[in-house]
Every structure is written in structure tokens, then in C-alpha cells.
Length: 329
Image (cartoon, rainbow, N blue to C red; front, side, top):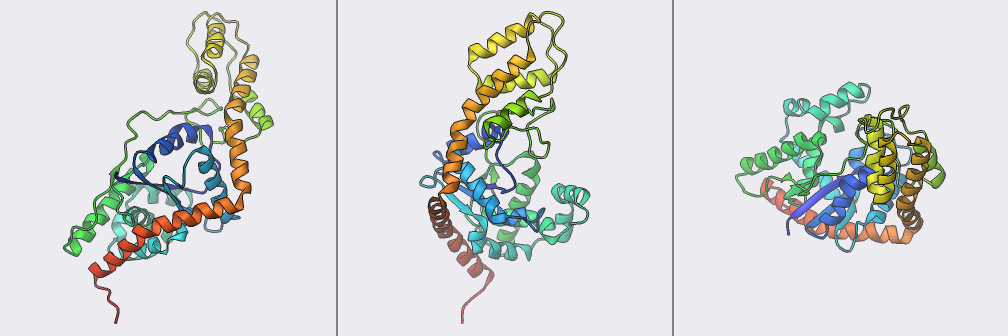
């Protein structure tokens, strides 16, 4: 099986969009590939260099992904900072990464624009650290979103450059991983596009019943249909999109028919949708809380993950050092 690697940033709770987008596919992917998942705590410092509770963030995101189905006995799940080999490969790759090419990356230019008072070296060399994450395990495939495609291309460039500089064929050039099916796009509750952390329009897997009911009841709607079978505005389409995923088919059909004959009451629709979301998320939330409280289990997971990850990481660093010319006296 091919080595497939994916990073998880510890910067917030998972919402329904995350779950039906990447997470469900990660769970499937781990059974079909030699899968590595790491919590990117080094990466998180590029935008949050002084986090209030970095360890707490790592613990929370680890508990949530485990609750969603990532299996430490099947996949390799580890914390980025537990592998010093990553930092060493990052340093070595930096020696052959050039200022001009790093300054031209879209992600760096975007961050310079959005956080002009925190343009640190970590932001500049973000693609190099990402390359180190991938190349340390000689990964062949990497699931990436549109915003990371250029950084994956940079990883390919650094792999090829290393091979050329040292006249070896050591690193493979990683390619994007294709889940083989269209990712489900979950819309936000504000009538806009996808559900997102920064937009504040999401239902989080850790939200309690009261919070979910409050969020759904505040979801944007229009004045209601006035003509039978009229086209739904985007905000109503969004609510039905969520209902199609969490509600029974018959329930969705009832409210769709009510919309089409102009008898729908959005308050009733939202109440039903909220209860269906609660029914769907409650088992996950309970599992998250259970795992989060089990310090011994979490410690076991990250210890096992680090041990498994260091098998390939230590081998790569040993061989890279030999290729470059580092030798012991």
C-alpha cells in the first residue's frame, strides 16, 4: 500500500463541514493505505506564535479525530513535535530553499496581507516544513485542499532539487491524493458558502443540545415562498442540504412539499432540523468527551504513534545525513 500522509492543525473544533468533507474520507483512507496522520503543532505557531493553550488544543483535536474513527491500531497518528527528525530535515531542506521562490508563494503573500504585524520566518519557510513533513516518511500521496496545492508543488520541487544536488534518486515526488469521490460540501448557517471556523457559521461536533438549537433557530431564512414550486433562495437551499444529510428522507420530503405548496413554517423546519442534528452529533460528542477525559488512553495513542512514525523518520534522517556527507569521527 502507498504511504499517504495528512496534517491536522490544532486550531479549533471540528464542525459538520469538516466531518463530511475530509474526516470521513480519512477514516476510509486509513483502511486502504499506509496512512500517517499528524497534528501539526509546529505549523500552528506560524500564525499563533504565543498560543494560550497549545497542549490543550492538541489534546482536543486528537480526541475529536479519534472519536470520528481514526484508529491508532490501523493508522499512524502522532504529534508533529514528537518527531525531532522533522525539525532536522526542515533545517537541511532550508539550506537549499531560496528566498525568491519562498516569497512568491501564494500562502506567504496572503499571510503578509492578513497579518502584517506577524511576518515571521516560519511563515516564509512554511512550504519547507510541509515538505519535511511529507518527505520524512517518503510519502507518495498527500490529501490537500486548493490552498495547499502550491505548497505541495514546492515539496515536489525540494525533493527533485535534493536528488539533483546530491546526484541520487532518493526522494519520490509526492502527488495529490484523490479520494475518488466528490467531497460533500456542507453550507454555513448564515446563508453563505461552506461551513467554516473563521466565518462563525458552523455546527461543531462538540456543541451541546442547547447550543445547536440556538444556532439553527438563528439560521438565515427569507420571508417564505409565495408562489408554488418557486425557486429556493440560497439560504433555504443550504438548510435543506444539511437536512438531506442528517434527517430521514421522509422528513425532508415533508418540508420540501410544504415549501413547494407555500405552507412551510420555517420555525417548525428549523426545530426538526436541530433535533436531527442533535441526534446525529450526540454519539460523537459523547465519545469526544469520553476520550478527552481518558489521559492514559491519549498518552498511549501519542506514544504508539511516535514510535511507529520514528521508524521511517529516523531511517530517512540517517540516510539523508549520509547522502549529504555528515559522518561521525
